[in-house]
Image (cartoon, rainbow, N blue to C red; front, side, top):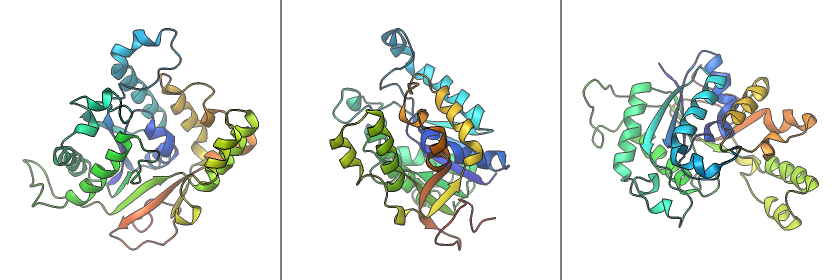
Length: 281
């Protein structure tokens, strides 16, 4: 059952940063699983005439969208970690007792450890320490994901439960948005008039420096599948969203590769990779 486990914060995150890789590896016969930390019950609602009528059942709507998106990319197994969307820092939702941001750290880590031992991935993917852009749920995916990668083989902190077997993932990655890609998107958005010069200048120094990216995965074959999976998250993603508005000539360069930073490896692998399973296959 060894393969890839991608840990994400909300429904739709799995497509944004890893959709092409999920499609590539699942269709190559790897066991691929997505773990979603929260139910996605917060945030803006798009593509509905009456968004507030949808809000009371938003978690249900987004669970259905997630199922559809993964069926486009898949076969991909899925697990919810079982927490509520925390909303943005300082919001009322952030204070909710069931919010992921308020979760007991060891309990949340233990939940992910159980899933790691159940699915037995060789490779794990989480976020960087800032969660990519500072959302509390994304930051917690980093904290809990890193702890669970270590904790899966730590019987002192997480003794085996009935039916469990010890498991030790071999490689851990952070998702990354390379600075070169951020700059290219910024140029396209400035030309389209969707950002001003001040935002354009700020974005020149955003993203992960390209020199720090250790793995570039070719997903060019799966760009269309990724786009379809993004559109499946219709309550989250408007039709004019910047990832869906890439000119045809720019699609291979901007959408045809997904990038990662290797944080730990328990196997010998090249310093620069084009495969998350390098050193394992």
